[in-house]
Length: 300
Image 1: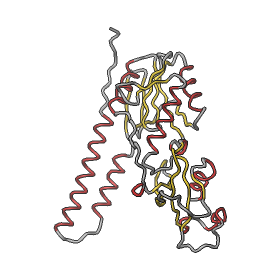
Image 2: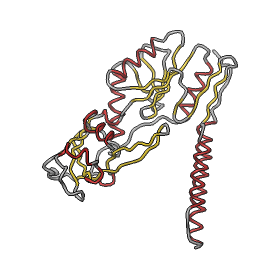
Image 3: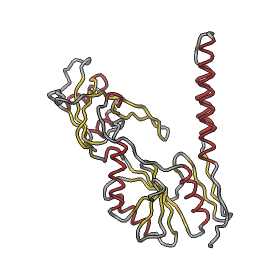
């Protein structure tokens, strides 16, 4: 929790303590919603905004790339012997965007480690109390955070000549660099460019670094949970999702071992949950892994 507080308060300056504890007239304050997440076998906690109490009335929607578009780009990569690809991930993507106006959030003192409370003058405060924060950047859970983050990113890319397709959301090209294409899934880039000229990739990387901290995988091994392996000798590209079946099996095992009464209604709900998990598993595996590829592409 200390690491997450440092990240949102000190590093990114996403939220600020309001010592007076007053919510501006006409506004409401929501609550913090700590969300646990496991990434790379490491458990993390994100302080999210309790969005169900938000009074934001503006546009909340943003574009996202369709998985079919991702497949087509992968197909394009394997069909072009001179192409290569990399993946890029933006760090703290939502936290880099600026809100149109501040939001407010109560943070229970019991969730803040005692060693950290002195930063808010709350070391002697009753643990049953909460302290107020003003949020000025796109904290997770804010209904407008995704749209604002994408809007700022697209504007930044446009300033350097990268344009989103009018007919295919989140598929980008450059106005004067014909050899580079990429798709964007929130903050994850899958980028195709010529391996004969790395300058196109360097230009995009330089563009992103002007505003964001990024992580680059020059081998392009991972994208959206998929492992990508290209074999240039046999001209193939394989994708897989290692560990996915094991994770699915663990979820089903949890459902199977969950203690329930012998009531028919409870048994029916358990069976329904198992069915939903199986349906999700089959759907995701089908959509993500069935990628059409061809060894040769017509030049006509």
